[in-house]
Image (cartoon, rainbow over all chains, first blue to last red):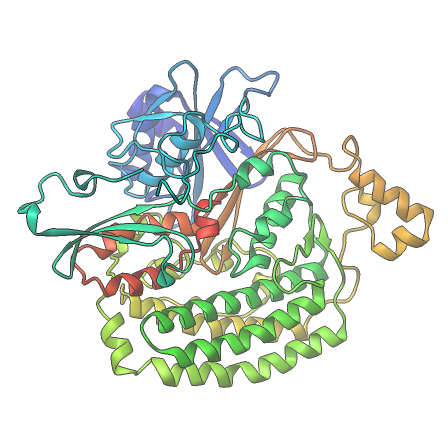
Length: 163
Length: 406
């Protein structure tokens, strides 16, 4: 079981630990997140990045920060899991990319950018992935309506004569 | 978006004038659904591949924020449509973990049996489709014949063949009966014969081996670094199966083995899937003979499960209970918490990250889709292979576009 004190000594981050059911979570500041993840991978055997996802806390009344970015980690030898979480804010939500640590992070970060507009500094391929390239909004943000902003109605249609 | 040649080439590509660009998909039989690959070819050798996805993106995660925990099951169904029930079980596994619900023993067994039937369902199609793409049509038909039997079983339990929407928070839509168990008994008896037939057709088939062996290599380190799970990871020597490592439902009671291989290629993935089917059959066999008696749903007093339909129609208490659960201001007591919970779906670790905010709708319903994560490895696996290997690698990844794009 990885100890928060060891991480604090190594990286200077101060992880705030909480537990819910069997999920163990650390909240770390955005400037420390890369160092913490690197330390967890190199020194504590968390060799698999299970997922990267984000949550928009716009509609949560007592939330201090706008976006939470979540990194569930897994140690494939011991089966230990740990969820590292950090917060970023408008107007410039940005985090360092973790693609140097895990190659699988590439598409996960692209999806988070695509859906939430959180940029990952140093990402090798920072394009949209699911939405079309010319799309301007970020659909999973809470201020984006479920029915969209009329993209469907204004979608360019190519007629047979033009094709 | 029109693509220029420069987009698809690695920056240091030598002798660009010899390279061809081939657009593979989105409407190609071997992509199975809609995904698009921009292949850069040197003769018949694939220099690079650039996947373009998003053709089936339909905002499932956004819908998950607007539908309640029971309604969203219909959407979850449509993600990986080769194993719809496995998705439902995974979704409700996560919801029940968030709500702190412990299922009844009978429900655990029924869900376990259905989850394993879905594993057979998925692996049969995968193996059949890989064989079909490589030119072996017969195995595909044999596999589909058994899939029909599974459809029949699922239809008997839920009334739907494909998108079953069978599970509910704290239970299931209907209870199962002895006739259903009898159907599965028949299936368990008949299935090994088909399995053996497919095995005889493919496993030692010279053409099949030539097309699969040594193709799409994925080393153990790469599998972990790319977050591979399920048969993909196990065929690369990662000994990991959530059914054993983080037991859920009735798996702790049942005897089965985790199938691994250190072959790391498409053929190893085929063998792992073939063997896993026999293990699933073993689980089903044990499961149906040991289904506990008792109710399938939680006690209705718990205020969290829908009452049985007959009691809704025939008694005032049942009707009241029904409304108690369905009215938006009643029903579930959802903690203001976040949870990640995963199950071993046929394709790999299918996880859900749910944020609860006190209402019966998820504030955020993130899916960890194994297809999406596996497809990210595709360019790495195909580089340096022949054009004809694209379909073999694509088949062994078992990419389901509906889950890929959600």
